[in-house]
Image (tube, rainbow, N blue to C red; front, top):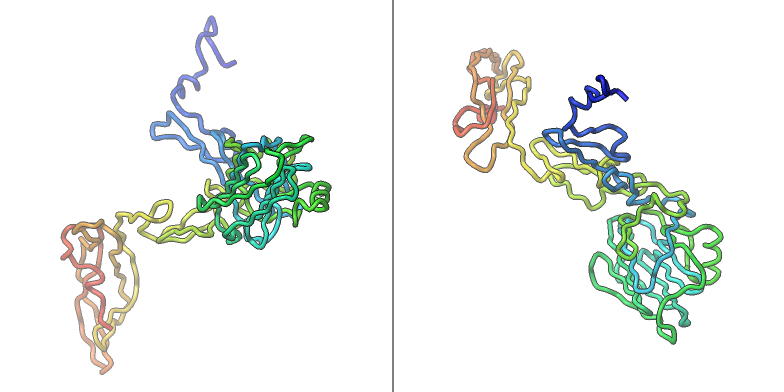
Length: 365
């Protein structure tokens, strides 16, 4: 369609004009923004918070704010398996993950700590509580590893804790096909596992789970078997600015940023965390009376101040163009007089810092 010529050999003009141009458009990056490089030959998608993938079409984090919210994933090959995720919450209790039938493993919040119940069939079930609390609203990386009858827990790559469900059985196995539930359980399953004492609190925790890996494979919640009352991304569920140091700036929630926040930098600073000083020299205008001792100018004076940063060398932000102006002054004793002041016309970085600046011309009050 669009070809011409006797034998349809001439391509559409648009293709010829833009043959080597990256085609950024609104639908290309799904839940993200499209950016091209300087010569417009390549593009990349920068995903919004909660999304990932080359086209920002994968859900990497979910927000949970309803007590019956959950996501159901494919059955977990739990023998010699691992479950890793990042958790943000301010809750003290709630279910984080559950997998099992008669044998089971559950991950809960209990008094702000991670509680794991582990049962491969050797009565009674084994329990473990994390040394540290995780309900401070900050991001914590949780890793749970199962090896035969042993289960271990690590938080933020710190001390590993372990429990063992000791007995005749050597490994975790199940008689029925079950889903791995993240964030909570369906109502009927929640009632059943509570009656069996598999969990203490079957309601969903409130917070955010992101970057989930099951047996070292990344989870895309877009492909979850079931999704109930979860939201992609966590911007509206937790404070993603918690723990963020923006240096010379302030943190603001930003759902279109991959991290869910952005730093608004003070003037003269830049960078993702406002960590870089910007070479700049600005002329900041003002209008006020000029004072000399007990005398004040009759009229308000328009002047300026040179403000900025010119690097760590000998350069400074200074006035490089000025003019002199004669002012009429009135004094408290009733006399009048005239004085000359320097008016800043142009500011720039200069290696001659002897040029007059506003600060050197501040009027004595």
